Image 1 (tube, rainbow, N blue to C red):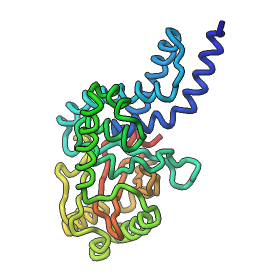
Image 2: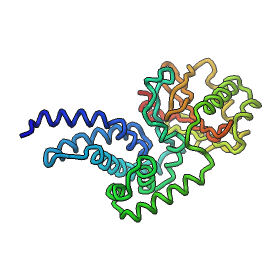
Image 3: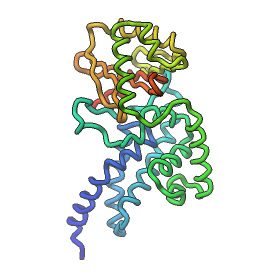
Length: 295
């Protein structure tokens, strides 16, 4: 007979090894690191209880399905809260210190911040179907078990999601060298209050979105166009001169700009880059999201 203690210890070792991938799955579905961590932690209890009834043989497959199903349920309930959110709602980024490569997140660049933003426009079922099939390579039959639809219906969900994502102007894969070059030009222009230089680094149709969660000052609507975005950013920087510490961080696998006041992360600025210009500027200021991201 198998020793129950030894069995739980073996499960724990396998669960720990699979945990980074499970968090990636949950994060891709939810757009929230804190919620993703909670979902994966809750599934450990479910695993122990299920394995006690009948040994789980395909641990990776079983956990992926359970985590994805739980994340989808959380997303459905979260959609109501997000619709009532004050101002634009931006995903909570995955942040790590850019100075230490060992701290870089293990997202494998499958969920760039630009992609996380656009995924918010999909329905929970579309988002889950596309994430599990197109990103994590699960079959339609497995995904059907997660979302409670037929495999044929799941295929249609993933197809609709794929068409929507393809129609977006932003590119979701990260060219790190290009991203770093644009970020450097952007930071130099913004820090110097150089409006002309900032216009050179912004796409003519750039969109700037601020998320303050109704708690701190932030634009309640997206700012559109290079001229307006540049002036908005120059004005924002002018308020911070001498009062903040600027640092580079990793946000979803790409460099981003963090602003600290008295050691506390109070703003995170993430660029979406296409070619040699920024096509999106996302400014996250909601304290709760920044606290969760700044681990």
